[in-house]
Length: 204
Image 1: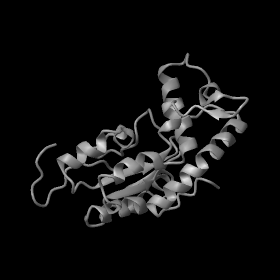
Image 2 (image 1 turned 60 degrees about the vertical axis):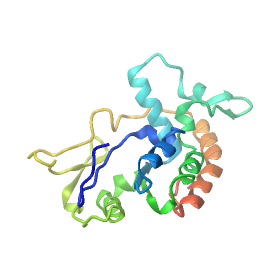
Image 3 (image 1 turned 180 degrees about the vertical axis):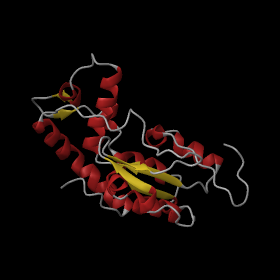
Image 4 (image 1 turned 30 degrees about the horizontal axis):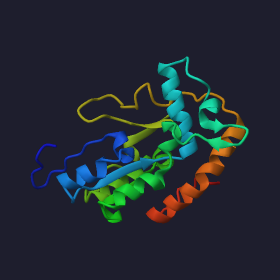
């Protein structure tokens, strides 16, 4: 990481950090004062999205339904499949809390980020000790993508939207499989709400 001068904030993003066992200890060894921002979303939607991303690169992979279960008739979910495993947020957070106090972690709701990007980014700016300069006027909603976009990217006169890998249409998944997954994640979600002091509303 580059050295940070007074009055500067150095940021870096890597989605896999949160689920990588060695990451908390390594980051703590580098700097115990590091502030951590984790964007989370409904783990069922996240798993389908993960599958959709893989499917776009490897169209020959098995169906979502067959990958979800170790034994479908017994209803045994395959927790070794990364698309499922990543969404067990409580388990991953336990590793982080061994190295960082909860006050140094901010959990951003992926759903609220889409519904109210300025509000959710307001929380991020407060957490980082920054002045709230990003407001509603910086965004417009792109109906095609189903995501908010920045009206004007920094240093450019053009709007900035998430890349073409985001906002893909999800395949139709058997509703019973989705319900089984909701039931599977419910206790983990509740534990995560307890640990973070935040109810993300995924169990409705």
